[in-house]
Amino acid sequence: MPNRPNPFAKTRRDHADETAEDYVEAIADIEMASGSCRVKDLSERMQVSHVTVTRILSRLSDAGLVAREPYGPVGLTPRGLEMAAASRTRHETVVAFLERIGVSNATAEHDAEGMEHHASKETLEAMRRYLRHDGSAMTEEDAGNRQ
Amino acid sequence: MPNRPNPFAKTRRDHADETAEDYVEAIADIEMASGSCRVKDLSERMQVSHVTVTRILSRLSDAGLVAREPYGPVGLTPRGLEMAAASRTRHETVVAFLERIGVSNATAEHDAEGMEHHASKETLEAMRRYLRHDGSAMTEEDAGNRQ
DNA sequence: ATAAATTTGTAGCAATGGCTACACTCTGTA
DNA sequence: TACAGAGTGTAGCCATTGCTACAAATTTAT
Ligand SMILES: [Mn+2]
Ligand SMILES: [Mn+2]
Ligand SMILES: [Mn+2]
Ligand SMILES: [Mn+2]
Image (cartoon, rainbow over all chains, first blue to last red; front, side, top):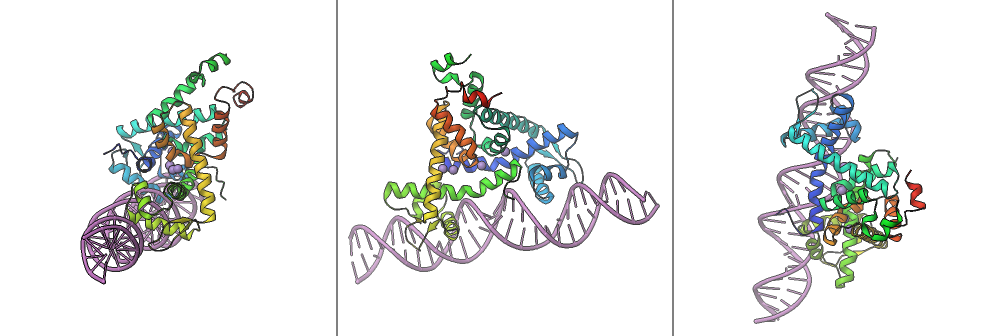
């Protein structure tokens, strides 16, 4: 049932994972930067109220991604850490790719934040291939045109 | 205050327009292909129940994008037509670009359905530039876009 | 230690987009 | 004309993600 051959259904499924991916990635980021992640940090990062953050964290906790205790810091479970690492890698790939084709860093960061959740494994591989080969892997002449 | 410098806020705004864009594009598509668009056509295309389609159409009608009468066909207003044309162009750009970097047609269609709504004008221009230059002409102008 | 400020939790509301069940309208065919 | 089947509308449910307002806890400053 997961592989429906309909683009719209696939997009809806991607959106279902979007919040989880962004939150675990943000938590890992903040932990790395400041030592610990608080609800407040997330509400500032995501630009939403602390109420929204709390409810989402509770859902992610039920899902086994986030470790949570009242008034305490926000942590990641092993599964949360995994997802954060994968999300970060994917995020960086999309940003680097957009910059490579001439998009400014600011725009790349903004667009990637949404696009990343819809880039399949195949598309990510194409992006990485392009980054490695500097876009020349498509045709032979391109390879010659580059140093 | 539409231009908040926060990627997550921007992504949320993009998502707010996503349904409208996909629906008007689908309506134009179906009208073009079969002469007229019915609720049923949309529910099949989007893979959702007719109830969901009806409610969304009613919202789009209030928004002045869709022309609607009970038990009648689904039409587009002038504004709806505009949005459909723009969405179609953007959709085709993203699909063509993904295919150009080596993504299969099926995957390109699937990924583009979600990615398209997050591709800013700047990113779309970069994609079109790349398509025009066939990915090779990165020798002069694009050299400036890298450092 | 007390008071103030900050942070977090909870109650309750709205909008959006899924759904099933059931009622109604429309249409094509008997 | 009648009626069966297809299409559409409506009621009402759930989940998610926004919000404000208020309460409780925690931390910081006096
Ligand atoms: Mn994101
Ligand atoms: Mn999206
Ligand atoms: Mn789409
Ligand atoms: Mn589209």
